[in-house]
Image (cartoon, rainbow, N blue to C red; front, top):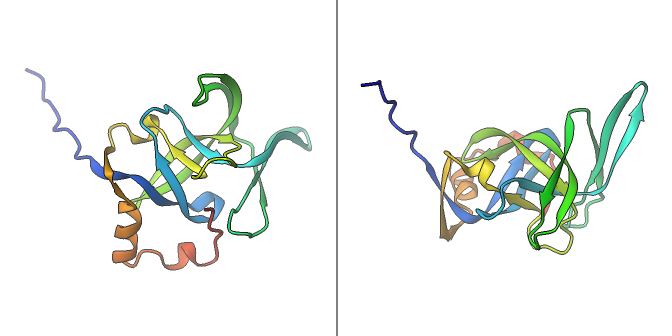
Length: 165
């Protein structure tokens, strides 16, 4: 008989939460957990390839719904992928890897860049990020954020950052 490792314990996450993106200097971003979506998504505008010398970079603008001006970001690590939207229509989207903080734990994950202007939540957390880490309790919300506030974690990492709501 093989040595079986005990399964990792999974954190309960609610249907929505406020999450941090340290690489993008975003804090307390409203996110919706969506077990129907495979990939996670991040709201942005004007996604395009730009030349930087001999290299190509992905340029995108993160839009703050609280009235702060949009901020431009660049990434040289990106890909493109066909993604089915909530209506079942396939669309080609850019994908970046960035860090997200949930329950004080930093997770490196892929996010498609999408215009979510008409949607309530600028971030969607899909199954790929959730798998083997979280169990979803749809009757709960903001569990990670409540833990952050209770443990006084919000300190320096969130003081001078943009809040995307």
